[in-house]
Image (cartoon, rainbow, N blue to C red; front, side):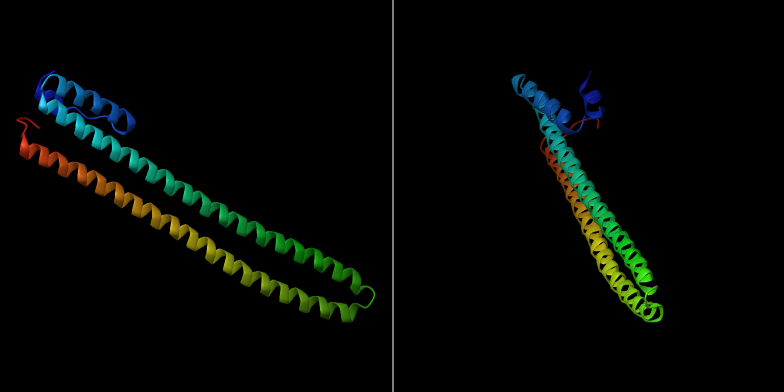
Length: 170
């Protein structure tokens, strides 16, 4: 493989890229091939950027899953409250047999109050879940920006390396 073939070769990212980059760097230093050593260092930097980007994506996914779990918890809580309200309503209906008119009015007032309370609580919990999702999305955006910055930094490093020792065929 010629030097021009090497410059056109696609580098492996992540940990494998770091290892391959280190091998190239050491081989270049042992053979006094600065171009190969520089290429190895650049590949290691790209591997580092890929690893960081993968970590950022994993963290964003974890936060999104947490937000989804929180939303499911809120929905489960709302359903539990609804079931509790139904149970209370059935008890009120049984008590209504004893004093139907009075119990019906009382049960209706209680059900309305609970429904309003459950509605308010549900809205609060949904707002919390929405904020958690937004927070996870913000974190994902920040991490994507950090990954982009790392990639840009790697490109700048490559450009500086090229400025120091330009390659013929890119």
